[in-house]
Amino acid sequence: MAPKEQHLALSSGLGLAGFAVANFWDYGSEAIECFKEEIIESIIKPSKETAIHHYLSFFQDIYKEIDSLEEYGDISAIYEIVHRIIDEVNLTPNLPTPQFNKCNDQYGHFECKCYEVIEPWIDYAIKNSKKINDLIIHSAFQFIFQDRRFLHDFHLELSKLIKDEMDFIKHKYPDYVTLKNRIRRQGFPIWLKQAVFYRDKGTCVICRCDLSNLLRSQNQIHIDHIIPLNVFGTNDASNMQLLCESCNTSKGDKSTETSSINVPFWNL
Image (cartoon, rainbow, N blue to C red):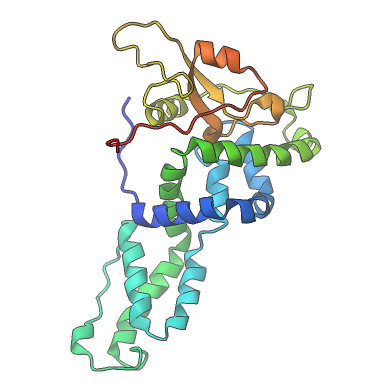
């Protein structure tokens, strides 16, 4: 079954993803702690709302962004940014647009007819802020999910939380914890297998052998935890990579080996 197509806010998503990755070492621990309970719920078994989604939500807030834009002193600038974001997430409302070229206001359009037209756009963005945030976060995840090196570092940091919070996890989710106080292994849903296979181009990320089996079925596909459960890794959907049977077996349950090799659209 082919992945479903969807409208993505790639420009806003790329900006959020870049900011979240660049600031991980400064704010990663704080963000993980801030969304601790939500993250723990997402890591006990594979979910489409991953720990990465919660981490991204630490930085994404359209309401605060609009509020901070007031420093521009020109509501037309606020409108342009709000309109661009709303249009990008494919939520453009049926509202009239301001005619700045017909307005002579030189003081930020706060006391002209433009303000009456712009205000409903701002109100609409605020009213739909959760949906806008979710769509931008979902788009940002598409970029971060391709960066296995960042996923490795993120889940290595997350493993510290799992270790520290194991008593809480065991109390709240007893069926998902082993006798050795580790997260219990769960099955991989079809959507996750497809996503990991698609992202890793049907290739073992360590030895680079072909796992597409288009010519002959000589290599068995394995979905591997980047940070193993035995070292407080999780079943979070973003903690997975594609390996062949040989690499998965030799990697063992303590190694966090991964690879930053990808297939570019063209090589330099």
